Length: 292
Image (cartoon, rainbow, N blue to C red; front, side):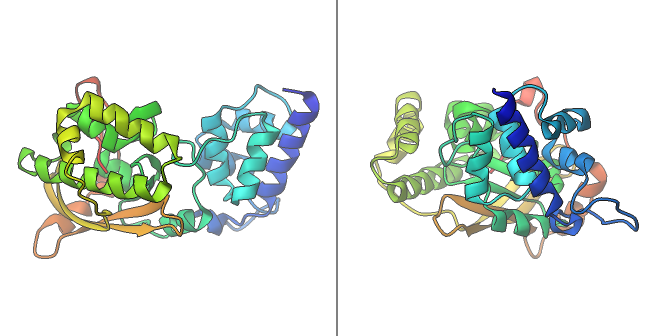
């Protein structure tokens, strides 16, 4: 990466950081602040980077940031679509296609997610790739950020990595499989025949999963807008929740949040999530036990 590119990248990051108020990203402003907008350490925290690394980026030094880091910075700084693409251009990285794990999360979705501090929530794509989770969602269903490639899609893991199903009671597996396939067919159709990402993933699923191939041949189609689900939590036990979806205007992203099913004791147990914190759902024996 050219030195001039580093300098421009650093200047751009600094300009975006200075325009954001702490309360816009869920941070407490504090009584005394010497700089406008966010501090460098706050951006580093929001992006999951070390403070030293982020300081180097703003100084125009250090190594070329990865696509994952650029995506995290774009979310932390609430960049618009144009600003997000500009960030990748400055870093001399290809702009990721829509729908992947490094896709740009629409600012409106991030704003709503930040307002759901007391509710497990996340933003996913129409191919069931998790883009960002709030802490309660991580505590409820595990951290999805380490999945890459095809396995970033929970729908793909559901059929290709059977251990991923452990978070649901076995009696619910058939209905979940049907719902995933119907939702994927609706999403793929909306993307159109020229979309290679959805088409290639579906082809792999047809070749690799007899169950998926059989369900796909039925031609059932239905977006997942609201589901009632049972989740096996390692410490809280079986939780009965409603899973609600809010779709972006283009349908490529959806904000998904979990609420306790009325008439059950799940509400009381969900209140313990903040106390319990993040569960070790990504241990080798349960590496795929994550959930949409």
